[in-house]
Image 1 (tube, rainbow, N blue to C red):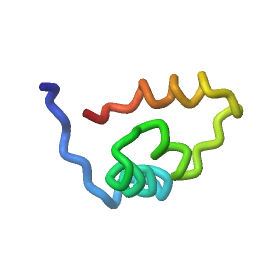
Image 2: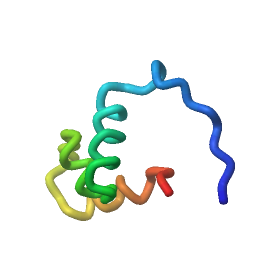
Image 3: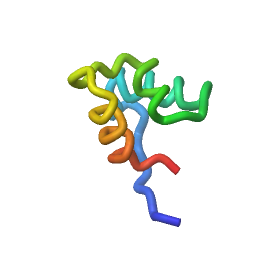
Length: 57
């Protein structure tokens, strides 16, 4: 398991907080990003690539 630094919730952006809420609802990183308002360039591969960069277990 990776070590995670403690994150103060006041340091997160509104988008990041929405993503957390959505991820807790659906358990799917890609869908959570879309539900949180991620637009990207409209390509599925862009969303998938961005999801891969998230450090969410």
